Amino acid sequence: MPAVPVRTCIGCRRRDAAAEMVRLRVTDGRVGIAGRGDSGRGASLHPRPACLETGLRLDVLARAFKQRVTIQDATELLQQITTANRVGTQAGSPPKSHRGGPGPSEGSRGST
Ligand SMILES: [Zn+2]
View: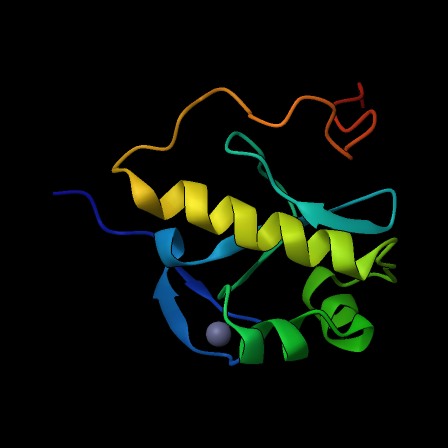
């Protein structure tokens, strides 16, 4: 049986199953939601108000990502987190297709 991936929440600093958390990543210094296939520098966060409040602070994020970061639109990011969480936890395996048409992520998949 494969070990369940565990991550540390940057909000409450607790370790928990990665599936319970939303994964963030930084692109060009901006914090966003990591896609399913995304790897690299990331941070995980419980989609709970308390964790989000702490975890989405710029100083906390900067420490987690080990670089200076910005949040372009905190409200939008929060919305994405709650949406992603809802989709991710409802079924055993989240659907592969993204719903919602024109997403806010622009050029997130650039070549290195
Ligand atoms: Zn937490």
